[in-house]
Image (cartoon, rainbow, N blue to C red):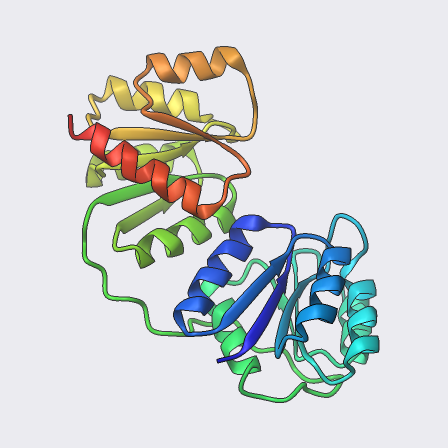
Length: 264
């Protein structure tokens, strides 16, 4: 068992990594900003740290420098959605284990973390781990089918992985037309639908679903508080509305309730 620290302001990603790593027997702690991360590192002295570069208070490079002052040899993987050659060079000069892009699939991220815990920190200039599929997918119990619709690819990936690990058969779409096509073909028991999407927003998708006589449940995700929109989605038969950001357990519980209600 290893002690792992995740420093990232994206709570859903933190939750999914924490849940997956704990299933492998590791002790996992999270921090959602740089100062909290440094304090947690100083207190916990983790075997391994996963560090986001783009944090809301102090940036990841400054956090990495402070970590190196505490422990020059600790294994650290950088995770970023805004990579540049200069940033990567600066990070590698500080002796990181790897430098990964957030657009990689969750399995790649998890595989990189698992490998990092088995190896000492790599010297500066080490090549990054190439993208690919790592790990063995869990056996699904094929419970209920769920369609996740959100234009944020990473959120789709995170929810798909998390719900799959809880035994659901999960489909995903990043736009309205794709969602409508999948819903008509697959007839999922529940659709988790983002309201705010470009092109065709979630309200319009829900209207078209009802026009096509879709009888499954619909649970809305939203980062906005537009009372008129919220009223309309409820009138269109949305079972629940979950505000963003929400932790994965909150979403899963809302899905469980929505599935029960959709059977009535």
